[in-house]
Amino acid sequence: MTLSIIEPLILTIQLAAITTIVLLLIGTPIAWWLANTRTKIKPVVEAIVALPIVLPPTVMGFYLLIFLGPQGALGSFWVSITGEALTFSFLGLVIASVIYSFPFVVQPLQSGFENVGHGLMEAAHTLGAKPLDAFFSVAMPMAKRAYLTAFILGFAHTLGEFGVVLMIGGNIPGETRLISIAIYDHVESLEYAEAHTLSIILMVFAFVSMLAMYLFNYKKGER
Amino acid sequence: MATKGQCSINIKKASFKLDVSFAIPEKGVLGIFGQSGSGKTTLLRCLAGLETKVNGEIKFNNQIWLGKRKSLPAQQRDIGYVFQDSRLFPHLTVKENLEYGCKRSGAVNEANKRYLIQLLNIFSLLERMPDSLSGGEKQRVAIARALLKRPQLLLMDEPMASLDDTHKNEILPYLERLHDKLNIPIVYVSHSIDEVSRLCDEMLVLEAGKLVFSGTITDALTSVDSPLLNTEHSIAVLNASVVSTDINYGLSTVSTAGGSLFQVKGELKKNTSVRLRIPAADVSLCKSKPNDSSILNILQARILSVVEETASEVLLQMTVNKDILLARISKKSFKQLGLKFDMPVYVQVKGILLQQNRI
Image 1 (cartoon, each protein chain N blue to C red):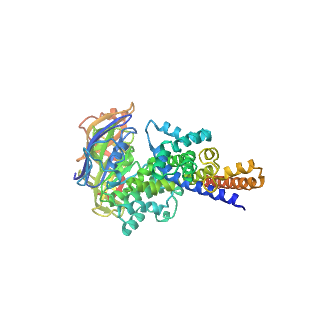
Image 2 (image 1 turned 120 degrees about the vertical axis):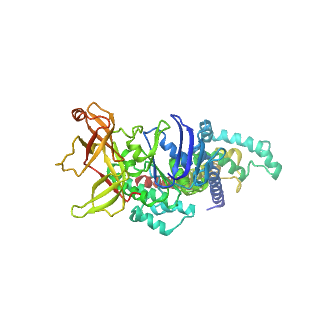
Image 3 (image 1 turned 90 degrees about the vertical axis):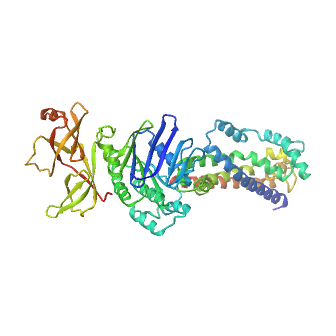
């Protein structure tokens, strides 16, 4: 395989992996809060979390471009401390991907935590477990399936992003040139063979990860 | 009654306001009785520290659990809690469930563990997952789990409510054993007269968040001002000890705290404590002493009060020596015999439910 295939492939996997890990870390407390809160603003927060599902990626990309750009709120701050722009960089892509794939991680976790229920956490407390201890010893292992679903969905969804990436990442080989961009590029240049190879890889991967997720859920449900 | 704690709390819930004050005994079972919605589970949850927004004061074992400014969270109160629905952790084996609490309280004690596993007969379940257990087995595991952390107070919220009768009978003997073997107080929430008459020593009766009666189980079941007196399961409870046995007939004679003698089935060890439960429906009355009855226990009594209930039945409260017995008889017999207050009568006790080793 040529560099034009390997490079975007590796870059994409890196991005998806980092994004998913970041998402699991920041998604966990948010999902836990959503699953347990009784505040009235919960639907508002849920709607904001769900926004990326329905928004056209270009809309998200556009706002992110403004937000992360050298004149934007975060972008200008970043330039002032590092001297480098966030847009058209790998880090910028990570930030964008985290926002873009947010609901795909938070929503499964939230429903996983909701299924754990308050009762078992209370039982853990009466047995001497502090809140964090109870979370790690009861809630998290019980939400194992939700974590797997969240991981697969977050990873697969990041893998397939195009619109947002195009808007704020551009097409810098080794920095922001992801599979989806590369495929688009290859097709534009009528290099169908390379486009095929990358597309097939993405397709097989997507299928295998979905299959893994459903198989796992199916086996659990069978018991 | 020696006390180990004091609780006076109030809390506002959507449907009622709980406002109670009572003492926690040093040992024995304190029953909390009430219909659903009376606040008994809320009361237990307040004791455990599972309710927020509780006002008042809870002191236990010289420790302040709830005060003006602070409330110890559940994990810092020295309690064991048995929930109505077991709440075993489904992702852990029975053994891991048992170890969850004692690992955290640092009370790992192999001897205690073996003892509880044997007491509750759960050895064969240790490697199983909670999902594969029956309701009764789950509750036995839940009780062992709560006790393994060596709590100073055991709270039980209708541990048998979710079980059918067969499973109830499977677990009741274990609860009776606990009553005898544990030297920590137990607070036991229930809405079953049968359960409280078997297990409890002291009673609190709740109605709509208010305490309407508190006293010993004997008083709670037989005094006129107790809401437990006149129910379809009216029953008297007497504590007694064995005075002699009759090997020829397989009987034992027991003497109650009030000075009455009863003959009960079984050759019991002398001086052991027993609890006699005598359902009102199993007691009948004669104006003169019957000499040709098949019933063994015939005692002289005086009618203390008449609680009229349905169109066809009356409930009588009688003193036998210093004990109180209840009898439910038909209104027709009541009228025909001309029974009235303070009249001397003979009671025939047909059924005595016996529990051994009561303290």
